[in-house]
Amino acid sequence: RLRSWHLAEMERARLHFQRQVDELKSISQSDLARLDKQCHDLSRDRDVLKQRLDKTELLLQNSENTRRELTSELHSLLPQLNKTRDDLGQAQFVQAQEKQRHVDTMQRVVSDMTHSLTAFELTH
Image: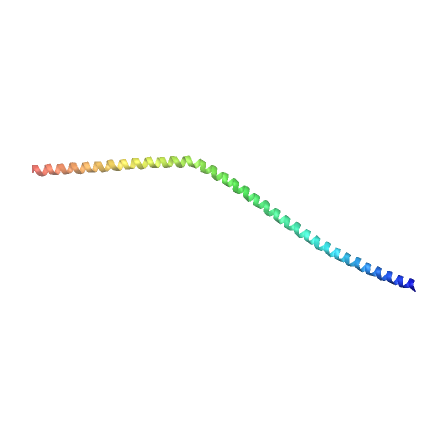
């Protein structure tokens, strides 16, 4: 009788242990499935971020190239801009001189005409 009780206890212990092993296996399987999905999702996220990083680096490189091109263009335009400004200043100065000469000439003509009319009136 003791032997059969020991055998029954051992069977109960074995069944209990087997249930725990099965439970651990199922937990492990679900954990592995969850971890596999997480790894897959993280891998996909990493790939997306890598693509975005590559695109950002390309945009940055393009903007740096554009900045260099614009700086170069600006430096090439500055001498031309300075010359144009100087030429404009010179042209405005010459124009002012010409206007003043024209005004002086018109004043002389008016003055000469006034003298001529005065002399004419005096003689007649």
